[in-house]
Structure formats: structure tokens, C-alpha cells
Amino acid sequence: MLRAFMAIFIVSIFSRDVRAEEFGCKSREWGFPFATVRNSEGKEITYAVSSGHSDWELQPFGYHATAVIQCAHCEPGRVVRGLVWLGVSDQPLHELSAAVARSLLEARFKIWFITPYETARPRGEASTIRFGDFTGWRRSYEAFREDGSASHDIVTASASDGCGLINLWLETSPQAADRSIADSVENLLAAIRITKNGG
Image (cartoon, rainbow, N blue to C red; front, side, top):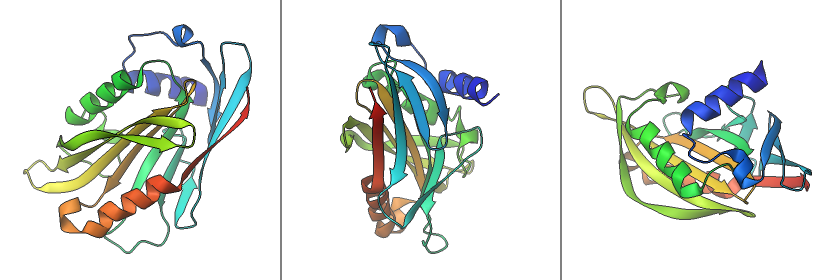
């Protein structure tokens, strides 16, 4: 059940123009907080995500994601939290980032966020990001309620080592309301650790 649900979910969010076989890696298994893939040589690699800082805790999130990560000691109203997906890299990162952007701007998958929103717009330009051997892109967005008022900010990050893939969708209080919120996002991203076994 979990495998079937996650397969449908990942396919529905990230539109595919290239098959996984063409990238030489295939998804094998996933759960909290790991994903196992098979590389082009037929060897299995297990990736696990963790936090390198005690302020940021990873917890299971049912069928919907590899994990949820959030600040365990943040004050009310200054919470930074997000969803983490580990999987297989099956399309170029620029295409993946574009698909994530479309889903956010069209609010097609807003139900996956803890805080609902009506519309979103990008803020600033995309920038590079690195988690160990994983490199990719991050982008910030502003989310708005139905009445047009600011709801929260969203930060997305997609990175790969060529076979494994991590996607993060973080949500925060509006950056304009408190600069410390933006600083907390940077701290969370810096805390992400990905370990690799096998391959």
C-alpha cells in the first residue's frame, strides 16, 4: 500500500519527460527516513536523511512523505517546518525544479502543505544548494490567502547526486514579518544530512 501510494504521489507531482531507466537508476523501496535505489550497475544504494542539529527534528509523516522536519524549540508563530522526500533521480534537475514551481504557482498540490494557501508567487531567483554530495536548486515563494493577504513563505529545494534525489518543501511565517524566520530556514537547510550506503 505504501509503495503504491508513494509511487502515485511522486509521479503526480513531478511530471516526467524522461524515464527512470534512461538515467540508469530505479526506485526499490522507501520509508522513514530512507529510500533505496538500484543504480545502472544493478547495485542497491540506500540513502537516509537526518538532522545534524538538535533543534531540528525529523518525524514520520505517514504515507505522504519520507519525513516531516520542524523546529522542536521554536516559539509559537515562528515555526519553520517542512516535508522531505527521498527518491530516485529520474529527470534533469532543472526540469524537476520547473515542475515543482508549476505545482506551487498553480496551487495544484497545496493540500500537501500543513498551512493551506490560495495562490503563490516566486520571490527572487533560484540559487544553488548542496547537501553533501547532493547538489541542486532552491527557490523561495510567497503564499497568499484567498483575500490576498500574506499567508506564509515557501522554500523548495531539489538536489541529486546523479542517482538519489531529495526534495524539501519548507513553510514559514512571512519573511517580511520577522527576519529571524529567514535565518531559521538557513539553519534548517544547513542541518540536513544525507548518508549513503551501498553502491
